[in-house]
Length: 207
Length: 207
DNA sequence: ATTAGTATACCGACCGGGCGGTATGCTGTC
DNA sequence: GACAGCATACCGCCCGGTCGGTATACTAAT
Image (cartoon, rainbow over all chains, first blue to last red; front, side):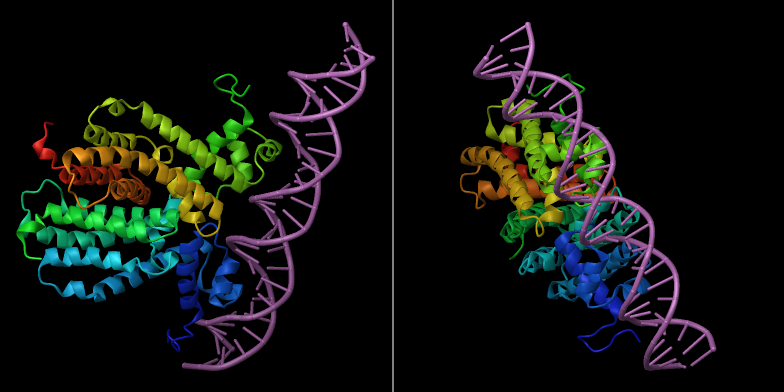
């Protein structure tokens, strides 16, 4: 079986969890295999037993991150709302609250990796694109439903707005890293919230 | 004197220009000093004559990039407008049009570098923060002036909105790299434009 | 006008260390 | 006894950085 005691998952899982932490903090290129092994408490032999190359680990780590993020968001209470606009605004608020805590723990592995690898590691770029786009598409599903109800004539597409929400989040992370503080990211998500509310003329609905 | 014939600036300048191209394409960590020298057509001796370390080059390159960007934007025609709101909207439109061309040539060196170095190279983080914040502050000056004229009671601050414009741009670059296409970045800037127009109730003004 | 001194710009061989990756062996389980 | 799941030792390469040296130019004393 895969999972052991809570504190001692198998080497593969520990390597993936270590990859999330370390790569988000130091980037892909500056994270060495040895350091990953140290952080995971395993040896190099274990690493190359489970992953063909360092790039292979990055691809699996991208999947791992996306699955973890999807789990977090699917389980969040805002998803229970029946009104798609409530779900959308709940999502944005939820993302704003996620910013609490240390930066390496709440930023996006995909955005971090794709910045440094989009030219040099096409496979990583494609993996990051896939997960970001799938996540954006999930947001866009609620947007599309909300649009039918509250803004059917609007000139923007649900897909485009879904991607925009992700752009704001990614950009917010960049600024937060630059300023070494999550405050600016929180502010940015506030602007995103105001924009989306405006698009749906939120003032006509109860709040 | 510093400058030679147009095609043969001195080694230092050629290294800085090469740094802009290469680091924006491959990231800071994955760019080696040797490769920089090759790209600039100089030797390693020249590199370490002009820069103490690789990190030192990054700091100077950040200044170099910021100066170049500031020059581009200051010279743009939209800056001639007398109405600060026209300058602001002109700025956003200008940034949208800048997205044309190859990605490594139009993305932001500061955002790219700070993502990978914010934990490991504090000096680079500070330099990137400085230039991003200064640029945002420049945008915020027009925002503040426009706010006095068109939205004096608005609940958001000019500083916060200035930073938000930069977050959208940085995030747009991340998505463009992931999708290997500038189209998504253009769309994102379109959303930013719509948001800002909405904040200033643009529909009450001539267009 | 010559020379000596000094600073700048640049060259390229070289170095130690860390890198990604490999080869081989051990150990428990089915 | 086959095989998954590791551990350990090791390899060759490339990395950032050093260093001794050269070419050129400017300054100032003779």
